[in-house]
Image (cartoon, rainbow, N blue to C red; front, side, top):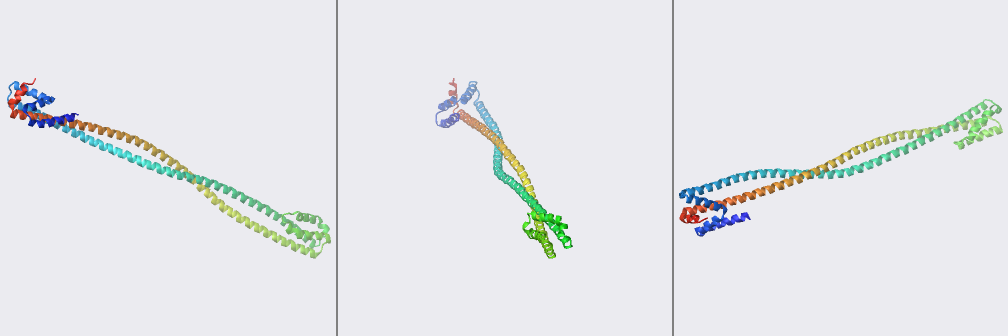
Length: 359
């Protein structure tokens, strides 16, 4: 409203050139500044001061207005420079905080995705460790069972071989001329061992039958030779059977030794992998937490910088309005001084008459 009033005054003063002097002076007198200047001119006129001194007065007023405007221009220029620097700094701050929010948001989101992968990896790794341990326990139990079976079967074979050897000694004694009565006790022991055997009963059946016939039908060299040959063949079969089982046992033991090392190495690798993932997961969680903290921090700082920028812009807008208003006022006041100088120079008597009639 004040600007509008000043502008109206300026336009009115310009139009005053086309109206009479009294109307122009009346408009000037209606303005507070014009009223003060006219009062000062009236004082000079009443003191019968020469016209040139009145002009000097008006020149002094015009010079003062110009000095005020120069000072105001300089002050506003400083304000503008300061404002531009502050705005530039605040805009840089805002951009910095925006970039930090963006980069930390990206870091947080990327790490959340990576964390999901790590948690799935550790879940699979834990499952693999359990499978590995179960496999080791199962294979170890199988291997122990295999070894126990081998030991039992070899012991049974050794027991049969021992019985076969005793029978062979018995046949040798009879072949060398010992009577059946002399070896009867030994015969009964050997016969019982062979008869009671359950692990190789089918293999021993011919020997048992032959020894039984020997006791029933009497001792003869042909029968003894047959039995000796039969015992030798059976013994060879038992030795071969033992060798075969030992070979199988050795191969199974070697396989288990190799496989158990593989399982142990795999278990060590999986456990180390699990430990690495645990560290990685904790680091990722820490990264997410730190990133979120920075996001919150820079968000607050961004809001603060934006508020300061808005405040600075509002302050500068007020200073700009004040500058424009005061500049317009001085332009209007300069116009008043110019009009008065014109009136005094061109229409001094009319001007003096108007001023003298003022209250």
